[in-house]
Amino acid sequence: MSEEGFEPRIIGFLCRWCSYPGADLAGTSRITYPPNLIPIRVMCSGRVDPSFVVKALNDGADGVLIAGCHPPTDCHYQSGNVKAMRRYALLQRMLEQFGIEKERVRLEWISASEGPRFAQVVEEMTQTIGQLGPLGWASRAGRDARGPGSGTGEGGVVE
Image (cartoon, rainbow, N blue to C red; front, side, top):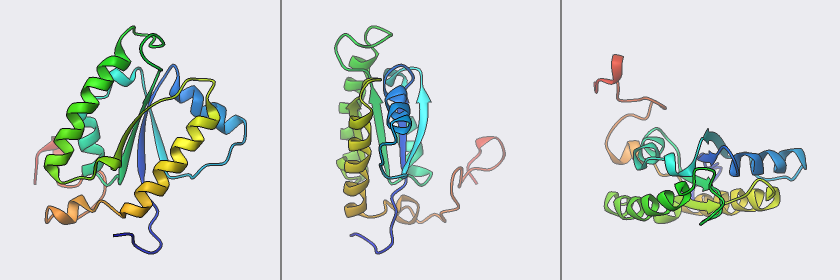
């Protein structure tokens, strides 16, 4: 289903304490990796609600990366990464029911000292999503794809 010239758009929910600094280390170390990831810093991977992932996909993302501290003991909030693992399992089942390939959403543990690992994960995910092709969720649902926030009017009311 790959389309020629397709560049995946990947949203990354990155833990403020581990994965976001890992991404920063990759950048400051001048490690090259694809620019397809749009990072969003969250306080903890356990804070990433499945609805955030569904909204990202609905708003045009082709894939979502959730990255946090290594379990079981590296979480700055004690058990946020364990909570993220549980939510991820439920999210995978939900996406399957939506007809979305499980490879489009990935959960990874990346510490602040793992810049090369961060770059590797982004590279792998970009290649995987590139092979899957665009999600095209808006066109599947018969809606017009106007980009982020499409389908909602003033105050989040569905048009």
